[in-house]
Amino acid sequence: MLKGSCLCGGVHYEAQGPILWMARCHCTQCRKASGAEFATNGSVKADTFRVTSGAELLAEYEWTPGRARVFCRRCGSPLFKRDASHPEQVRLRLGGLDTEFEERPLAHVWVSEKPAWSEIADALRQFDQAPPRS
Image (cartoon, rainbow, N blue to C red; front, side, top):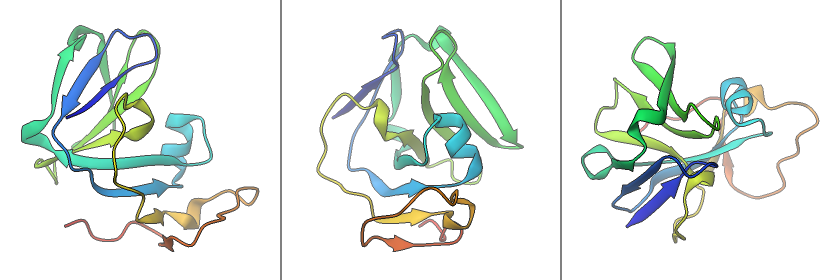
């Protein structure tokens, strides 16, 4: 079982693994939402995901119709994303997980939006945008 929480500890969630399609995203929105040079995200099956406490602290930012970033309104921690075009999955911000997991990133995505000062120093596949999700 994967378990995660926000920075202030007000929101807790869990999902059954495995993590599906883990990637390091360099898109401008992920960088701004995380405050980092990239965000490491991974999907889980939506029917195994649930918020176990602090649902009243959740807020959403819908940056495009049907696509929402969910965060803790108290501490601002980015927690997960929902996409109406992929309702079978929830995309977790993996930095919020409290449990260890075995899966590793498969690729760097949205490399076309990576800032010039950011260097990719591993051998993972790189995609200018996001490859099709299965």
